[in-house]
Every structure is written in structure tokens, then in C-alpha cells.
Image (cartoon, rainbow, N blue to C red; front, side, top):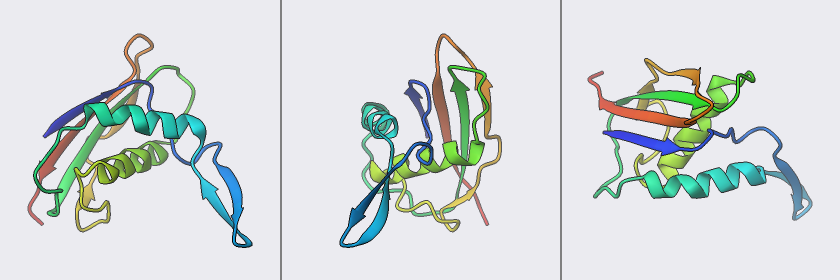
Length: 122
């Protein structure tokens, strides 16, 4: 399965909001991340059943700027979006077994993430 989500990839961890709920602090994602997550929905195909078998998740991030970004934070955002919109049942290691081929590149004119999901044998 191949999915391309247009727009500059946004990490979930940076610039989060801390709020108090029942006397305990909880972390909410930043407004830019929430907007990015919402926009990504339009690129997610509808599938009958979420993936529940081992896969390699290959993500090629094309960033709008050359600013350094933590690749693991980008992957976390992508995994959370794929779970939220029903592509993956979960993003634990028994399903997302590897990220082989993942990298970040620069493309000022066409920022995006190209996702390839491939079933693997373990």
C-alpha cells in the first residue's frame, strides 16, 4: 500500500500544550500538529480492516525547510495518524516491525510524506 500525504510534515512532540485535568498535568499536541493531522485525513484510503500483521513502514519525508528535525518524532506522528484513521490497528512492534528505508529530504516546492506499507515475514 502506498499513501502520499501532502503538506509539510509536523511532529507531535514539539510545542505541545500542558493542561491540568483533575489536578494532573496532561500533554496535548500543538495546534499546528492538530491541523496537520486533520488535513492528512483526506489522503488516507478507506480500508475494510486495519492492518494487524507485521509490516515494514517506509516513510520518505520531504521537508519544506532545511531545518533539522528529529526523524523519530516524524515517525511517531505518522504512526499516530495511521492508527487514528484506521490503517494500522496499533503501532506497536508486533505490527510496525521495521522502518527500513525511512529518511528525510528537502523539497521546498512540494513538502509531503510518501508512505509505503509492506507485509513482512518474521
